[in-house]
Image (cartoon, rainbow, N blue to C red):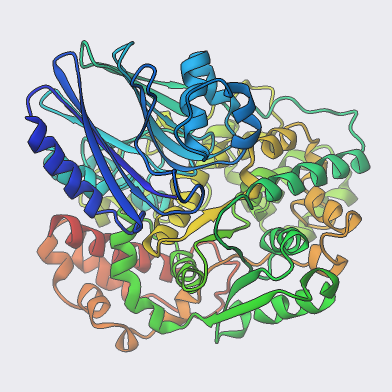
Amino acid sequence: MCGIYGIVSYSLPREEILRRLSHMGRLQRHRGPDDQRETVISVRDRWVGLGFVRLSILDLETGMQPIQCPKDQSVIICNGQIYNYIELRSEVSGEPFVSKGDVEVALHLYRRIGLDFLQRLNGMYAGAILDPIREKLLMFRDRFGIKPLYYATWDGNFVFSSEIRPLLAGSGLPRRLNHSKMGTLFTYRYLPGEETMFYGLKRLPPGSYLEYDLKSGKYHVERYWEYHLDRENPDLSLDEAAGKFNTLFTDAVRIRLRSDVEVGSLLSGGIDSSAVASRVARLRPDVRVFTLAFDEEKYNELPSVERLLKANEDHFGSVRLMTRVCGRESLDQLPEIVRAIEEPISLGAVLPTDQVCQLASMHVKVVLTGEGADEIFAGYRKFLLEMAAHEYGNLSGEGQRELEEIYPELHSYMAVRDRDPVRRYIQSELLFGRDELRRLIGREPPADLFPEDALPALSGKEHPLNAALAMESRFRLPDYVILRLDKLSMRHSLETRTPFLDYRLAEFAATLPPGFKVHLGLGQEKMICRYAFVKHSVLDRETAYREKQPFTVPLADWLSDPSSLPDFMKEILLGDVVERQGVLSGSMVKELARMVSAEGVGPETLVSGADRVFAVIVFTLWYEEFFG
């Protein structure tokens, strides 16, 4: 895992581009502390500058980038890992390779088959290829957007980077708050879609490429992959599905262990990271696994982790368990976390994610994680609720009463459930209502808060559960779940790999009947995962069927007593920082701070008073960092 950056300019001199590139690299050396290199190439009347900072994991001797083909002078830089590079290398064996790693394979595939090379890659990547013959610059991002890539234009110039701060430094783009997105940000706690909170700065969407024409200075963005969930296979038996799942999952873990340095695994008490760690331990018995504990009992999953290791001793007998307690003092790190994420994401999981990544980085450069399973295999209660609402009208009176007992919130959900699957999904987990938003941000929020460019391509044939999964995987997964993981792991120069986001596994999941994903009668999600893990001896039954506990922190406990908070938080909630910034309502912020209570709040709570206050704190820190 590394960092990439580049500038295309018709007006800046070569020396100035090199100076800017060097500065852009220094600003993201945490992504690649082992090496840094830049090159500037003339194409037509423009200079094209490309830069790379390296975290050395694969091909330690010859894997430095940019990599240039001696045949046609085409160049590639790429952040991430192409896991199937060994299999692909045989397809381009006649090409003049100058390295032994994964990235050059992508360059030669592009030279042979053009844009179709993107369909052949299996991995996490965000890259750029300079094609001087076609006079094009191609930028591309992996199917699920595991690796970030930002870009902007200014005065006819073009700039891109793995991170925002280097992009701002390398461009002439002024720093302006994207006021039009304030309502969306405080509705969802992150910003879905192509736009960011920096006006004029965009993300390349997941599964997309951007082609920049060096002749005209114009570009266009295209999707090369859509996650279609209207291809259900009703003839598939549960045992057949479990067998196929196990084969794909095992191989996804196997190819993600390809590395020239030690690989570890993150582990919580949940089934996703437990299954990944189990498969890793089968292949690397002495693997280091990293987990967190909490002092607050209802959040603490360390007992579940210890029970897992003991119950599955044949798998985990030789693993080395590393543990850290994530306590209230982790709040002290929030300014640095906000600075690293660069976007005002305000879900509490940023704190434990940062803590466990820091712990792992002290021992290894690479870890495997369980992220992605919830979004692909329906791992949240909202998916159970959607399935229950869909089935409710087809059941007898007794069947309906049984569902009402299992899902006490079902009636209130159905009372507001929109007929349109898109609107139905985006109304869930709202942080502030429209009237509250109007007061908080001091302006009328747009009528449609959700950006159209973040929507999946739905055919209308999807089961309601699959339509919700399409939404989840199209924006919440890349724009919150994976963005958080990438930025916080890279803050500590740690590479994280996600087997559940192997596109082969995801495309298989799309063919499963909805009943293989959720079990309404048991109130359990990810049923095919649980069943397959037991059937194929990945996990013991108790672990596989344990109730899901979200990976979050006791925010309500920590924020309910303002006097115990770090000084910077006190200044936000009780002082004049908010008024001085003039973006949010200071009086409303103080009201929100007084309303925080830990009573009746636990890890399963979707929205609490603490979540609202945390959103304000994160935004204020972010604004102070980038605009203060």
